[in-house]
Length: 448
Image 1 (cartoon, rainbow, N blue to C red):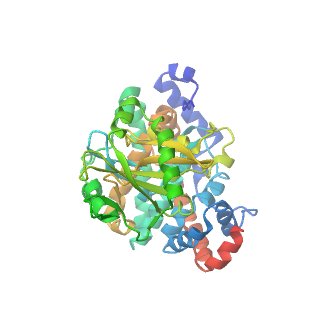
Image 2: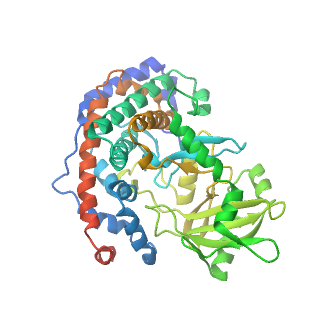
Image 3: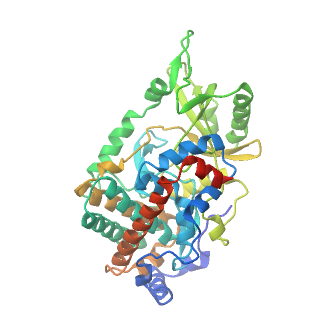
């Protein structure tokens, strides 16, 4: 499946020409058109739309999902990507497409282990990834900054400033990328040492240092009498039947073929010891998620693999011209490779009982920010990193010169995006209020 976003002939135009082309798009979609948010008269009932998205999921798990979404407006927002996808589809766009994360929010950036063992920081959630308008990622991230700031008890003026800094950071980074060689963009990492105030990235990296395979062995498993270990049976982990265990291990045989030769060689050094079920995330709750414990060179060499069900992106119905995938696990895996500078070496996909699955390492030095840590200056600091990170992802998969030309070098895009973020955050508060006041039993009736 090709992931080329633009016709290759466009690449033969100079950056100056493509910047001018981006500037011309302001006639079609003025930057001021992104300001504000007002629900359409025919906006679907938000609860009905969200419940419809849960059809086909494991119904016994849905109350857990609802409880997690009822914790706070930000928690609700994390599980309400399908609702925002419908709302974004009604907003103006430039027509410039990139490989979007699809669920861009402050908690979906974080640290993880690179193939060479380094800890790196990047976007790290791709369940909703698809080729779509760059503006949708920017708007979803901007709203998350407002909601995270409110969770951290920041003043509204500080939240607005943080979004302004986020959009400015995105614009400025895109201008930098518009002048870089293509190969340098593909190699570029947003490092923890950039700038003067990246303390929060260091906080996340330090968290990630503690999430090692050895620590996961202690946290997720229990010792057996023969010196080996198996998964414990404490929530959110649950045992599986022998039939399911056999099906998961059989699916890993097909998964092996989606890896490169060197990765297959590494995987072959490990032997599966146990399989369990694990409830993960917020929006993902209700999908099937299995974890596999493997050992390499003895009981002190564990490897944890996650086999996570992949369903179509919630944006699919609104983007009929986006490249289509016959396998949703492949869509997520390839989207991750497109967006991240360095990627988990065990990312691949498989099929089990007709369902699609993404396969990857489970929590290998993976960590993210807690929204409550974004109080005061921390919110602005982190928003700047979010801007650079999102710009890097979009520059890798789209035309940085085209986007830079549209965005411009002034703040004529920043203020409208701030207005949108504030207005849609208010809408989210209303939707959260309606959701939190609805009993789980009534929500289940809406699922059908």
